[in-house]
Image 1: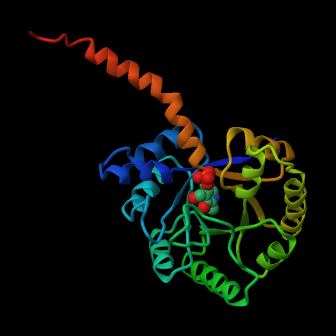
Image 2: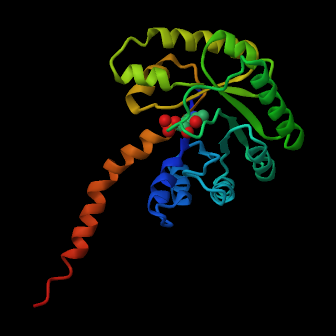
Image 3: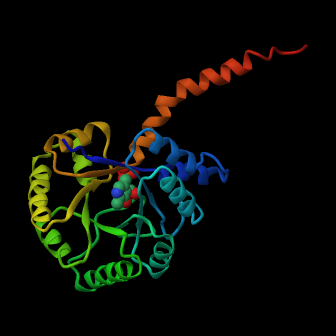
Length: 253
Ligand code: PXP
């Protein structure tokens, strides 16, 4: 039996760190815990504005992945700067994403319909493949047949379907059947072409379940919810430790 892979996106450990300008919580520790627990890969997004992951996190996280014998999946835009960094770092996977500075998170997939954008993505993939042929590329896109057919014009190894709208509809109790039908159709297109079929964005324990039942996606990249939920899994434990420490030190005078 084959099971789907989990890529843990640890961007928001860096968000917390950057918020206070401290060295903690450490991205490296998050990578180590994730991989030691069985995560199949670490995903990080080096954004142009460096709002969470910093340049120095890329090689250190990659070193940790190598030590644990797991791939690093580097999410990035198609700017020349990012292409240069990626070629230097040689991650096992690159996920090309659209990037707008004003957005809170990656809103929507790559535009591979507009000919100029399609050309930019094609050129980016060609540059990456000629410089670092062992690196695999996925394209972060919406699951519509037209978009996916256009992805086949690009030399990439997989698509990662943007599940943000699906996850939002699920959490709001809306009908998700149209999303599931699109995912089924998309799977057919990608499998016929021999390409990988991944998913990510906005997924929670609950919203990922219907997708797991569908059994179409080989890989899920999940971040924000895993990090958010970890706060509550760990909060009581850390408070107990702090209280134990305080109770060893009675007041004087
Ligand atoms: N996959 C891609 C391509 C993304 O851009 C993101 C967000 O950075 C994720 C997965 C993870 O999304 P989330 O943090 O909402 O789980």
